[in-house]
Length: 565
Ligand code: ARG
Image 1: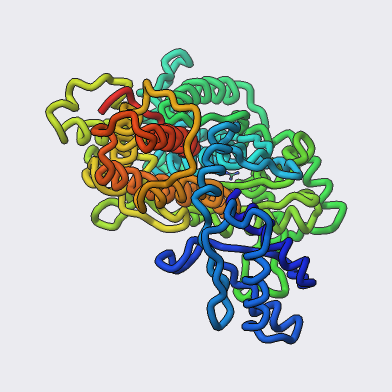
Image 2: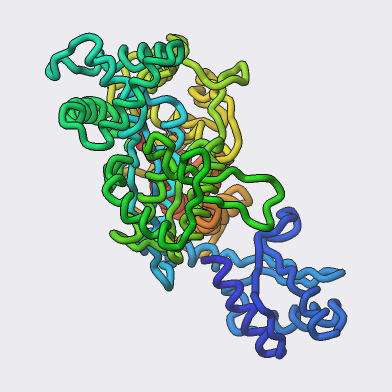
């Protein structure tokens, strides 16, 4: 909101001076020691209007100083050579915006002129295989981006897109037959053991590998017995997956899987066929997806293997077809390991080429690997297939062992803290980068951690919980106070950037910065020692609003606040 207010004032002045700028964009100052905000557009105007930047800058400064109610907006505007306009905003403007935030829903965030539909594909766990850390990343990054988009006022639909029809199912069914299991004997323990066992056997024995592939193919073709097993496997494993996502507070509107795409494959095949886009190579049906501007050779998408089986790429194309028919979104976003980048390039290009994706914006948001202290993909202490449950338990244990009094905490509070540790550790990183998951470090109450931000919130909240202040004066009392208030009114800048970049890390950064400012404010202003002076009531209002801002931002990262710490 702050930038819109400033841009509007500047626009009036530029209009008056007959300067037409393509875009008026005041930005946060990159020299905060000199000013709050700055305008860098003067050079551009100078080249368009063939005037010197100094001449233009001085005129803008003079005219700005003449606007009505200058002091409602500005404390100081100053042109500085060679072509910058430095802006300090007035305390009144800061406080007006704070009041507006406090009195409006979503902190007064502006809603979009055009509401768009975003379809988000994240989570992507595989039935019958244990969920690993990568699936957690996809789930929490995806869910967080969904919440950010929702908060911005757009429509979202999320789909977990289960891997429920691939080779691993054939392997598990092979195991069921091998051990002569009755359908009622299939349970989670069995699934946990059988997949790794048969998967290993398939690697060692060509024949078993082929049998598993054949079972998978027969299942996809609708073999009754296999379908019965498959349903049972999906039920058991699916419930376990739901339990884990519930623990993480990750929610999906749709629980579709790869299997749901099968009924569209023939239609899609016809559409592609009718445009002569298939080629046959070694008996497989492929689509060439090369483009002229490619700098390296991209392999074709394999639509159907020589044994007539369909593949990961096929189901993804059919799924896009289904999503376009059912929801006609403006965007489809995919959250998966960055190593799947080629796969998505192939799928997107094949869909564009055949016009299956129509005008939708298809976007792959790849993420890096979660590494352990040794810099290699993260493993829990218990072994090499790190299950998420083990990870949750490990974090829990480490957090509890940090302090004697942690042992007495409510279980539900500990779960919230475990969630905050995991999510804040993950979401503060640039999505594309690998990061090192250091549980001991991320469980500390100091540093850029989940416990730190929760602790800050609880400390402030405790102070203002039972207070009720209706309004504030126009004062700001010192620099700690001003920096805090300024950060608060800038929440929408972070939100807009996080939305634009699809980057929860920007929200995490904002939360952390706000917490640091809150703590310095608190250490330097001894609010408890004050009587009911004006500054005390003003500060209570501000602090109470800060807890509101934090809470909304926590929610975007699925971080819930424990009752105490
Ligand atoms: N199941 C896949 C995996 O475990 C992720 C699915 C991602 N989504 C998609 N539409 N391909 O790697």
